[in-house]
Image 1: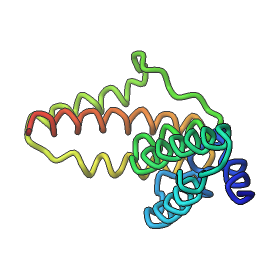
Image 2: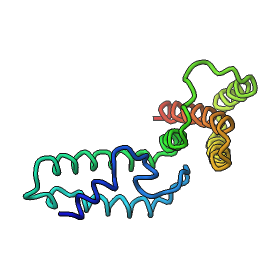
Image 3: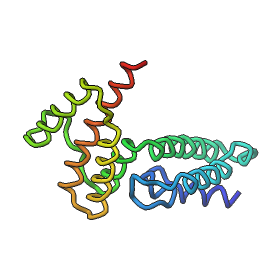
Length: 166
């Protein structure tokens, strides 16, 4: 069971989702690579591999498995992935308080008007993803956090449109 002990050590619960799966910090996670690494990890942590092991090893594998499941879901969602990318960079997520960026506030009001007129906001959301990724890769904290705020607003707006449609 040395392999399992090494797997437990290598998949420490203190790693961010990107490190856990050996992926670069990006919101554009290569899905097939993520799926492959996730399945390989789950195979190593399967309860059948721990038959005859002590309670500590079994509990550790359960905890790592739960963390890996959460990390996998985070990396599958663009907005959650953006949260994780910001945290992985060591930056603080912007506060949920009122935003003082007058340009962003004007854009948000215009987008809300566009929604009322029946416009499709998905291209704006895709643009926000691109802007976020670009700033993230430039390692530009202020620019990344501003792009994140815009991305999050657009995601909420699209979510409210989808909820109203259903």
